[in-house]
Image 1 (spheres, rainbow, N blue to C red):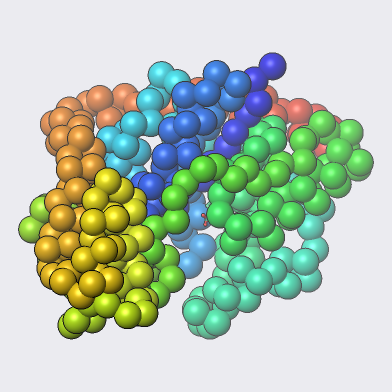
Image 2 (cartoon, protein in one colour):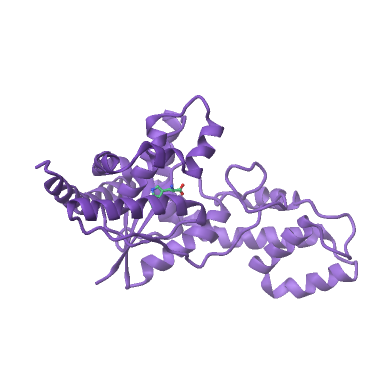
Length: 324
Ligand code: TRP
């Protein structure tokens, strides 16, 4: 039996280099490993749990599919779909509400963070975020969830719900666990923390041109002279050198140590290497967007495949809960 893997992808905007080398590479490995059956879902319904722009969502959910296709997700190997097209997600989340207390949801750190961020928009949808995520995973009875450590509290909720549904209604939900995939840690261009969509000036978009990438890498705050202890910006630069020009790393390190390194030379070498890495993605993306019907078809077929599994689970839940 194949192990089922489920990942939800936020529909908030374009992929950046950090997502690509961190999360997406791991997703590709899973899809190519015959031990696993992978489902990848664009979590568009989750977007409406905090204030959002309607036209933006309409565009972003489709762009997310295009980005993942260009990155190498293959609809022949994994199920790639939009959450909103499988109404069973919202339906199961509602049923899960009957085995979940309000207090449990209010105490989640993720909920508290959002309350701070949007004090005037603390909606029922926001409170229900973890239930919708539990439904995403449990609809497919997936046991493995490749997500970041920040999602652990949500997975704990999913496990609790699985246990309750199994005990109270005799369901056979697995208790899903986080699955750490091998991705690299990509530092922020500003020298602090990791590359993040929400931090301006920290990221490189996968569709950035070579000029834009050069400009961004040049903006990494380095020192004016080389040598001595490395400041965070210089460390960041060498972390990028390690990732993208590993063969030249030592050469540049020596130059740094003996004080002859020209930062702009190193920066441009890194920028050019990043661009070279992204070129296949960009070319593939340009091909894909020429064929909008193909995208439509991927979306439609993905939803059909997902629904055929999801509807079975919902039928089973309704039957056990006395709703059919
Ligand atoms: N909450 C996840 C995040 O913020 C996205 C997500 C939604 C998800 N549904 C999921 C992740 C199901 C894993 C499984 O990244």
